Image (cartoon, rainbow, N blue to C red; front, side, top):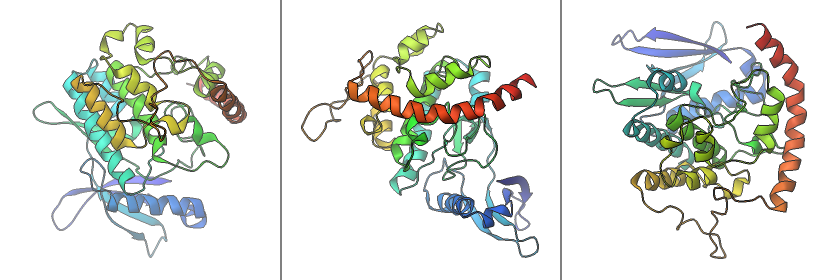
Length: 326
């Protein structure tokens, strides 16, 4: 959507970030709304873990939209995890606490990120060695650039992190979209691995596409065991993970605040799930580790899978070409 520059504020010499948007942002109504959402999110979300927007406008000479944000230091989350894995449990708990608080602050005022991924989370190490995060691009629904599996796909977000319902016809954003990504990100922080089996195999794009939209969601401990990291999964995490990444959106935690509170129970070794009950009083945590799918679930998966695969087929050849050129 544009370029970001490090700038210096003349009045006090402090470092800030200047984002200059492309002129097309004003010409494209959808892109214009994305720009407005970023401005809104950066000014209205009350969280120290979200990059703040300080000013915005349209340059009189170039007629380009711009916004000035606080300068966020740090490295992308995936780089941090790669350099520090396995993360101490207290660091995982600290990062998830900050991440869920930031996303939950947006949910509390009706803002959904829709593209949570390691690239959009910066980690800075404090003097005492503890991590501190900043969430970027809050409120931007999707990038306007070309797609790959690790970058934003127009209309879908980033496939290996975004919920399958984001590819459905008539999709309407909801906080549960972010809950799916938060579940996958928490698994990533614990294990240092992306949850999807074929995410790191450039030769298995079709298998990856099937896995993303149709495969059974294995318990986190089972998937971690397949890469020799099951000892990193704490007791109770399987149930929390299953509810976070349930393919039926209405069965997930309602937002980041509810999911974060339940995750705190897991970290503390407390029972999780007794407060999540439906209107009829029945427990809604039916998506337990190892639970079988129902006919309704299978029908829904087939519909979503078919629609998503049509999109996947359209981009697979382009992605294969991109990998071959690496």
